[in-house]
Image: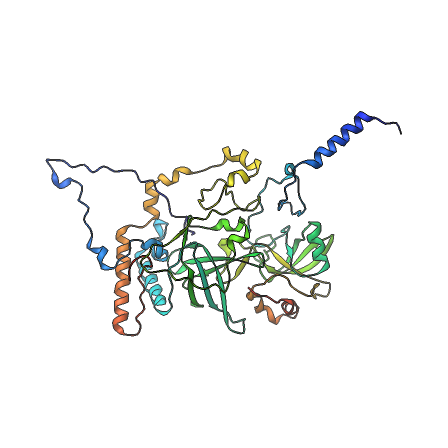
Amino acid sequence: MANLPSSSGMLSRLLSNVFNTSIASRCSASGRWWPQPEYELSKHRTRAPSMGIHRRTRLNVVDNSALGKEADTTGKLPYCIHVYKQGRRAKHMPHAELGDKILVAIRGQMRKAYVVGANTHAHYRKHGVPVTDKNMIVLLDEEGNPLGNRITAPIPTKLMANRGSVQFSKVLALANKYI
Amino acid sequence: MFRPAAREVVKIPTRFFSCKSEPTRAAPAKKSTRKELAGLIPAFPEIYPDFLQSPVWNRRNALKEELERQDMLERRMNIDIPEFYVGSIVAVTSSDRNLGSKEHRFVGICIRREKEGLLHQFTLRNTIENIGVEVMYDMYNPTIKKIETLKLEKRLDSDLTYLVDALPEYSTFDFHMEPQAHPAGTPIPVNEVKVKLKNPPWTRRWEILSYRGIEDTWTQATPWFKRKLHKTLVNDYEKYDLIANYRTGSTKEQEVFVQEQMQKFEKERHAAGLTRRRILKSAASHK
């Protein structure tokens, strides 16, 4: 193959420059967990906690399902695409709060999930209801049964009020630590 | 309305003029007030922020304050609401019908205290299994069974919201921590720790906001925010606004009035013989 030493040399030098930039391991606002090079760092702050979970809100899966673990390792977190709730927001879907059922997009597929931890804004908090730094969900399969068989994070005791619902009681059975 | 952090007003020195022809218009000599001896607390706004008036001038209503105060004092006679500040470690036991033991205990550092009157709230923060958890409690909610101050101390700021973006070790407190008694009469210790933040992005622009308890935000801030600084509205002049300080703050007369009401209430209840609980007290002054 005819070698063009100058251009290939330049190309390889360019590539090595790109990969040698100081890669600070940062919790990136774009939702990617693997190290991002500095020049690509998002200029936006992490989205300040909003009134609730809505479409495009990224969530952390806290059960030990394989799907959840894959999403976490690849860095593409699941995000909400629908909230199953009757709401009063004019022309908008209502926000999801602690204990609501939502539809998430995860690894190219759609899954139902329950919100077990919400990062509620300070002005919307209620007395005695714990607020976590991360929005946490538990994935459900097609029939509505939880995908994993254990919940790794502690969940608020307020969720125990939903004991009556058959679906939710299956999720509560998996929890072992309550805040 | 959430009360902004207490304004740091720059004290402009005032001159007292004394005129020989009109000696009555001279500045009054500073005399030690009899009030100091009557058991009133100079640091009243810090210890009882719930008894202050609304920071919004037009919402101040004497009747409303009187009615709320009566309810607050009744509640304080039933349950011991101890003295604590932002930065103290507090344990709250509230009743929870979902649990078998019907009691829910949460321990955390108090990060903010907001609102006046019966609506007074405080938020506790702790880290449980590497997840930061904050719980907001209404101080006068009857479902609270017990409030204990495990460690009484203050911090450099009156609002520790930045702990959200700080390293988890600054928000981690043991649930089974032993209460550390504060010797009566000693001043409240100030913990001058400077907290280290996690890598940006942060939830707020800590590099602009003047919080004394954060270590070196500027070097950690990203270049984009640093370039944006010259366009940001930074209102440093607000601390010189005396009129705003007068409108939002409290006067000595009001504090004395409220304390006298509290003393009267205490006396009546003690005379009725049902309880000997003392409401108006300060850990920094002698008993």
